[in-house]
Each structure stands twice: as structure tokens, then as C-alpha cells.
Figure 1 (cartoon, rainbow, N blue to C red):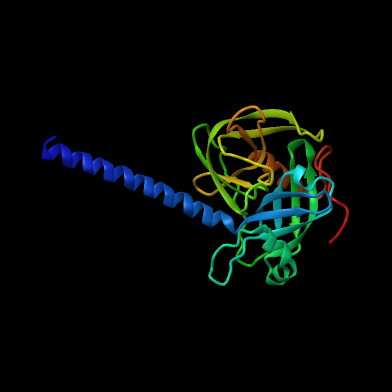
Figure 2: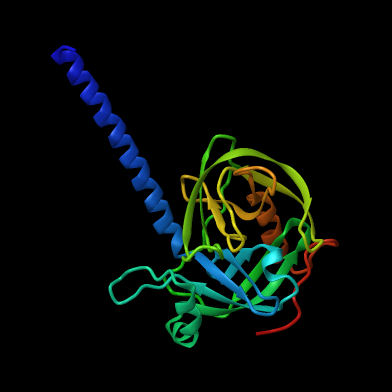
Length: 260
């Protein structure tokens, strides 16, 4: 191989490595920007754990799955915290054992379930407090399309860590009906993705490459590999539109009645 070909090959390799580095850096930035608005939800009433995302910081609203909150009126909600060396704390036992301290710091909140939509597997939680630097994640104006990259954060129970990042691709966007093992029937517009999902990831944010919310994780196929489903953002927008109305339309989600 002559010198010219060697130089061309070296240039091609360097370009490819540069592109890979840029993509990894972009994904890391998306994770960092999404992390502050992502939450870990602990539902002691029904013994469940899940994830969620702040969609309206002014009104302290978090969206998650119905199957995460169930019939509970309240949940504990945690934001990501850092240790004295500025390292992200990912151990779930640390959060639970330091609940009162985190409450005083504003990194843990009491959440009131203010709206549920069982058929769409969605729920709204209003927090009694919110860290000052947290901003709501903007809902995407346009739906994602097959082939687009997506990014999510969840809190899988089988993992040793909280705030776990998962990349993926959109496989399709479509209407889907299914039932959970407890009998809950869901019929919703979903994003079919290649992202892995495990118990505890449910309700976690799914964003596009611009960091805009395109859905929340909900379920996965038990018979196929890397076939997971996120409730699409149009369903979340409809739930928020209902919440904004003084009198919900017939058939809309119902307000929880209990107070803080």
C-alpha cells in the first residue's frame, strides 16, 4: 500500500473515531440535562417502585405510569443527589435511609396523585416541594419516527444503581392494546423501541436527540428481544390538557380526592 493510500486510510479512521466520540459526548450531555428532572418513585402503599419525569416545574407536576402508582393517594419521590466529592449517588438504600435529610435538602418530596388514566397507563403526581434548579422537560412538538435515536433514564430494580441510562432506536409508532399480569388493560398510542426496560424503569422519560420528551416507558414484550413500549407524548399532552381544565370531560381521568 502506497503512502497516499495509507494517509487516506488513517484519515478515514480518525474521522470515524471523531464521529464516535462526538456521538458519545452528545449522549452524555442528554443524560446530564435529563437527570435533574428524572425521579425515583417509591409507592409504599402497594409496594411498587418506578420512575417519572417533571413536566411542569411551576406546578410541580410529575408524569409516570398508572401501574407505578395504582390506587395509592401518595408516593415518596426522590431527585438525584451528589456526595461530598460531587459524585452522583446511585445506591437506593442511601436514599431511603436518609429520607428525612433529603427532605430537608429538598431532594426528596411527598407526592400527591392528582390524576390517573388507567387505560393509557398514565398518572400525574404533584409534589409538595421541588429543587430550585429543576426544570420541566418540554414535550416534543412532533412525534418521533422509525429509525430515530431515543434516550431514557430509569431505576431498574434488578440493577445495583439508580438513574440508569439506556439508548435505543424507534422501531415504530402505533396504537397498541395489552394487559398487565394484574389485569390492567391498556390501549394507547405507543413508541415501539429497541431500548431495554426492566421493572422499575416504568414511567421513566424517553427523549429525542434534542432532549424533548417523546414518551414515558411502560412495558416490554415477554416473548421478543428488545421490543419495548413507551406511552407516546400525545397521550401525555392530552392528560395535561385535561388537568388544565376546570371541569374534565366525561371519561377523562379522575382527580385523587385526598390532600397532602
